[in-house]
Length: 175
Image (cartoon, rainbow, N blue to C red; front, side, top):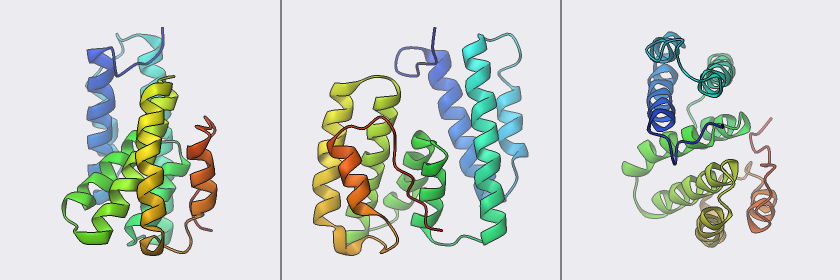
């Protein structure tokens, strides 16, 4: 068995609850919020669920350490560091928060990046059809909003990976 939030209620609850806790941890600069959320699932869950939780907490910690060391205020910069840890559902959640509060071209490019992250959520599950639909929408919006994206985003690399549905996501965070 594998971790599958599309077909398992428990997996979906773990993913959603951890992601929500990560948003709170990121805002507070404290991993304990996510650790407490993880603990509520206990030790009597399938090993693949335990591995998912353990892996997420390790990656959350890396992002929080980067955020503390660099005092990130740029939404895209933070999102790309989350992206580079392979936390695509969390990228979606993080950007969605900002997307809901934005307008105009900013709203469009945030939605495009949400869709790019969604492409990788689908690819992780082997859902090529869903990934293809999501990728197509992301590509169109990213190309249309190119001038509104930060210059440090390697857009050509991202577009290439999305066009090819490359399961190996690009590293996007700036140095």
